[in-house]
Structure formats: C-alpha cells, structure tokens
Image (cartoon, rainbow, N blue to C red; front, side):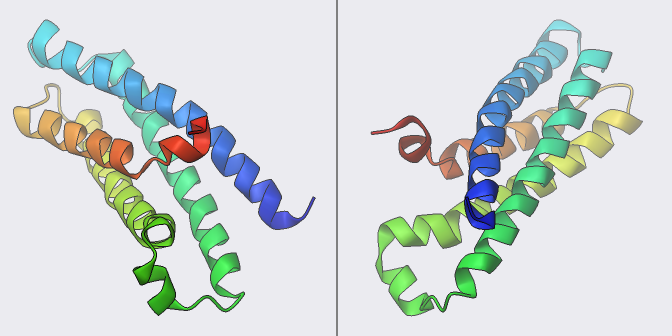
Length: 143
C-alpha cells in the first residue's frame, strides 16, 4: 500500500467520525440555543472543540492528498471542464476550508462567551451546510 492510499483511507475513515461529530455539534448547538436559553454548557464546548479538531485534521490530510495529486501533472483546464473532478479538486477542498474556518471562529466564541447568540447558531448551521454540501456522499457510501 502506497502513501497516497494510506492517506485516502485515513481521510475516508475520519470522514465517518466527522459525520458523527457534526451531528452531535448541531444537536448540542440547537439544544443550547433553544433548551438552555443560550447558556454554554460543557457538552457544547467539547463537541465544538472535537469537531473543529477533526475538521482541521481532515483538511490537512486532504491538502497533502491534493499536493500529491497535483505533482502528478494534472491540467486545471481539464479539471474545470469535468464536473466530477471539479467537485473533487475545487469545490470539496474550498467548501471544507470555509467550514473549518467557521468552526474555528465558533469554537473561539463558545470558549470565551457564557452564552451563544443567534449569529453563532447561524454560523454553525452554515458550517454544517458546507460540510454536507462538500461531503462526497456517493463516494463514501456507494451509489
């Protein structure tokens, strides 16, 4: 097994964990906002932290995989013409990058504020939406 396949399997395996963490994050975020009147609890802090950490790990694995692929001499013009390749090499990485940045901001806000605002909830839903858009569902779960 070569280095790229090891990274690919790690990226795919962490993807399953990321689905679970994002689900827990959304549940904790909505429960905190609507069930606890916005008062931050430890469950929200921990799910936000672990979701952010795994977003960053996934992103770093993905960047290394992109660098390995682009050193093989891929043509950007051909990638942009093919919708499957465009999703894999452009839309997926940039959507996940934005989601990771939003999760970092949310983690900072949750860690430093005793309550969450509607803006944090909206940012969390946008991050989860970007994750859901950019996640390769058919590739991971088959089609």
